[in-house]
Length: 583
Ligand SMILES: Nc1ncnc2c1ncn2[C@@H]1O[C@H](COP(=O)(O)OP(=O)(O)OP(=O)(O)O)[C@@H](O)[C@H]1O
Image (cartoon, rainbow, N blue to C red; front, side, top):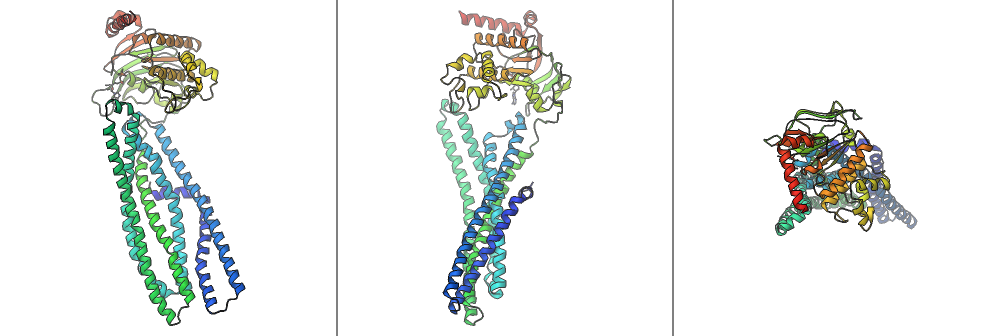
């Protein structure tokens, strides 16, 4: 979609605000154009001494009233038009955000966060300006131009107008050239700003790593380089914008010289009054605004087009996870995988190969295997963050993609190994999926996740802020807050992806014990625990061992120990490690 389609589509939907602004603008333009004519008549009246003092005072009073009316109308149309343009910014941001929220993990893997942030702020601002400021200046400038030219030609003197306007086509050509340069310079400037944004975002997120590796100076130098490039690129835009002024300044000077030459001649031969020549010169001065507006509008449109060209591909990017499912309730029945295979884009080896398993409602599944075996990938297929390329994943007899994404997400709680906590209080972080939860429910979930005692030791307890401006939690505390969040959500399926890796074995046992109690209280709730530590899955109804993406062993803990394979060896090793730690 082009910028004009977007903006005019928006204008059609908000025609009321635009029409009201246009009416007020017409009023302003008519009053503005009327003033020089009035002053010219006053001058002629005074020169011929036909105007009395009372008439002069009345004329001056009228001029003041016109000035006040122009002021009031100007303030009003600006307010209305800008409010409408902000609305466009709001709509675009909402569309952009909604699209991002529906994108799957692979989209974010390919896009850089700083770029997306620049699009949501800088680029949408540029489009907003094209819909507000550019529409306003464009309409006002054109209206003033038509009215001023009309009155110059028809109301003052046609010959003088045609001669005075001779330099204007040259100016139009210069404007056209400048605006095409602004378009390309703006694209470059927006791209450079996005690159700078990206660097800031990545450096701040990875500040500890940068420090630990002693890379601060290199990062600062790179920042300086990118900031310099961004400054140069906006400087180039400014330079082209600055070229408008000399172009219309030269045009007006040339028009002024022609006016004085021919105008003086006509006055000399009594074909024009001095008052009319004064009015004409004032009208010429009034052409400054339309000229300026033309330059301003072309530059805003250049920026807006460049911004939309960057934003549109993101709005049109196909959803990496489609949401065409219609089922709005999870059907009763097991969660089953049949021959599931998945390979990440640009990876030769598949991360999952021919995986089949069944998990009945209310059961706990343990998922173990060496690092890189495919445990997280399997969970991400179940979460529909990834779509299996082979085989089928079903829940209650229906393929996962038959469910509306919102239904599926509402029925699953996922705790990753490194959970994300928002800049909010601990209570708000726990109640994320259930903002209406009572404090007692939040505390109950925190107790189940074995984090309640830690929280009560913080100075503000559950109201302690975490995240950027709050306290820093340890890895294990963060994991337990995230588990409390998942338990409070009370979903049909809980997926723990190595979510106990940073807590000690004693705390792990307490949490697992609480999970079992919860399962007894609320039958039908299933749990999947992916873990490196086998103690976390030993009590599971079914344990599946993944190796290089394939199911290599499966059964209960006792069966697997008896089998004498990878699980049994790993169990012995971890038991030995634990007894050595204890001694
Ligand atoms: N986003 C990704 N892009 C490309 N390859 C990936 C991606 N994530 C994982 N992989 C690869 O897929 C394979 C399985 O990874 P996965 O994270 O599922 O293993 P895991 O068993 O959970 O490992 P760990 O126990 O270390 O967390 C690995 O070879 C990994 O390198």
